[in-house]
Length: 185
Image (cartoon, rainbow, N blue to C red; front, side, top):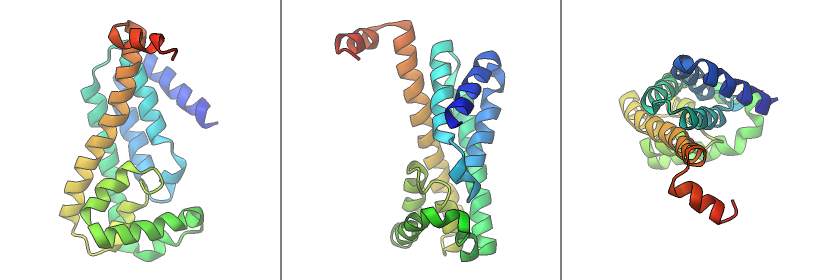
């Protein structure tokens, strides 16, 4: 089911490239929401769209800004949901499978603060949880936001950029394509 959805999104990008930044913003926003985000394949979608961008020579900056803005908006909403509802939000039965990661995330936040926000965006099991946990902590919103903006930039650039680079090199040739085939890959 998830593979079919990602394939459909990639086909949509191929047909409607001008909508890709908005699509990425919506997917990144959804993936960043506490509870809901554990069900959304945001990183895989970024890789699929990045691959389509590499094959079609689409500019990456609008895609990067779309993914980044959606991630920051979703993380910010999760932060304020955590601030408003407190630990009750993280005790949802839908998060029972993530209980170990919630405990680890809380320890990381108490030890490293905003650095845990940065790292949490890059780790799939904690991506949708850390912003809400930061909201329940004493971390000020402005420090959360600074760390989150940089983390969202790195997250989006890694996924989109790597996929676009590899796909572009494979589709359009060059030294990478030669190396790739020379090593039997």
